[in-house]
Amino acid sequence: MQQNALARMKSHLPSTTTATLLVLAGAAAVQAQPSETFIDTLDVQVVEVDVVVTERNGRPVRGLTRDDFELYVDGEPVEITNFFESEILGQAAEPADRTAAPTADAEPSEAEAAADPASLTVVLYMDDANLFPPYRSRLLRRLEKAVESWRSLNARFMFARFVNRLEVVVPPTRDLDAILKAAAKRPKGLARAVRNQRSRQFTLEDINVNSRGCQNTGQLVALAETYAVEQANRAAIAADGLADLTSTLAGIPGRKAIVYMSDGLPQQPGLSAFDYIAQDLCPNDPRIVPETNAAAQRHDETRRFQQLTAHANANRVTLFTLDAGGIRTGLSQSMSFDGRAPSYQNDRLHWTNIQGGLQQLASETGGKALLNSNDLADLLDDVTEQLASTYSLGFSPDERRSGEVRRLKVELAPNVAQGRSVEYRRSYRDKTQDEQLAERLISAAYLGSTPNPLGVAVDLGATTPREKKVHRQPVSIVVPEEAVLLVPGAGGSSGRLRLLLLAVDEERRGRTPVRQMTVPVGPAGDVQATEGAFRFEVSVSLGEGDYQVVVGVRDETTGEMSLVRDATQVPSR
Image (tube, rainbow, N blue to C red; front, side):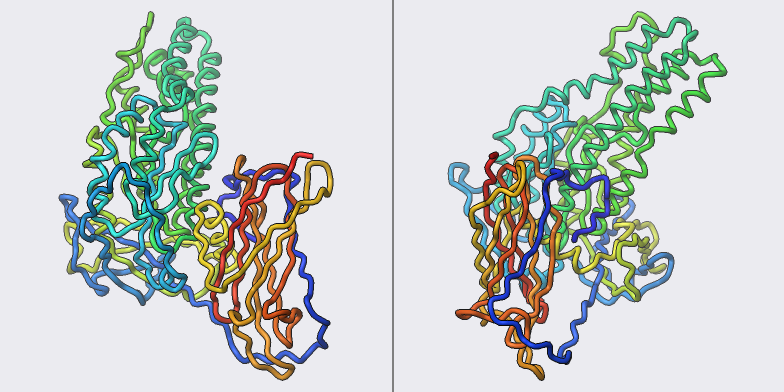
């Protein structure tokens, strides 16, 4: 079962949704045979650390070797066993005919994907719930020109957005024009993003109107607290969306980069409102500074963002965070105050605070915060340059600590370090094989990538009611016998198949837990082949709605894995 690093950021599940695996043996039971091992399965993990080296002027440094780097895990040096310099720049692709329908990409084989640790997926992610419509419109007008440099990347591209939930608009594709077309079809922003943008102004105006010579500081702090809670809730929802997107990408091999577009993420929600009370309205009141400082410290999102970056680092996801506001100017000029308007220092504090979360997400994952510029092309050029100038340092951990976050540190050797800086992810988490396989099902459910080297066939039968608003969905799985490696033994040949099952609610985006079980198959196994195939019946209990059901079958001897996805509808009766 999948263990999500961000417990608070899991997808929401209907309380009635459960999953069970029921294996129906297709042949007579066989007598137990003595266990005899012929093949040892060794899960060798190599952790890849992507590193960008730049000169003082920000230009990337190329041509370094393995000996130019020093790598540390939890403060201890480790040997760099794998090393390569990224080569993802290719011939710039010509824009496709805008009237032509995009063609589906040929899906790489499992072996090809696993053999390419340098593969790259770039996600354009618009947080529409936190994207002021005028800023959003400006970004869209400039997007086509701005992404021209991406045409030189040997990468796949994806477009996602967040409204009330994560929406994968365009799954990974090499057709960059498909991304542009999809973005152009969604020109409008959200009304609540306008309200979010203006909430600071409304709060400061309320505080100003109720100040009354600073005689009622408790009421003023309460108004600021309300604003802080609203900002914190929005930051939590934004972090949930990013965490869900990261989980969706987890099953994709290679490097992943998310270009996150929003109006910012405050590290300390409500900070400018507390500062406005203490520094602008009531600077001479000795009681107010300790009170506002204590209130501000109660609202700190640093820990939440650390959890998010640990989740991203565990899945080799780099975050490039873009402040859609561009060049920030003072807000107070647009306010109509009868009393004291917020100071320039208060405005600066506000902008620094909302950009602080963006800075943290980028720096801790080895990315870059794209701030204080209205030139989108320059900002996305920085993304291209950094992605195209990456070194990959691989190491094998001496010990496995499943679920534990471990700190990484990369330094340059003294002879090449002068005047240069390095960017890299600051941590990694050792994931179990069960978790990695579960993530592949999640990615298949949301993105539709379903390699099927074993030739597995899946049939979803008719649902049957089990209880109020809950139905049993039967799933038949057929695995060709010739696709499974059977190993000779004293009692006959046998193999092992791992079955995995997941269902995703297409409307609410909730999902069942990923259920797994391993079944011995073959003449000496629990399930024998009938008519040239191993046959299984599994089931999942689902509430009403439309679902994507994903089945995974893995040959435990060879490591080959098939994924099959199909849609089903559970009636409301």
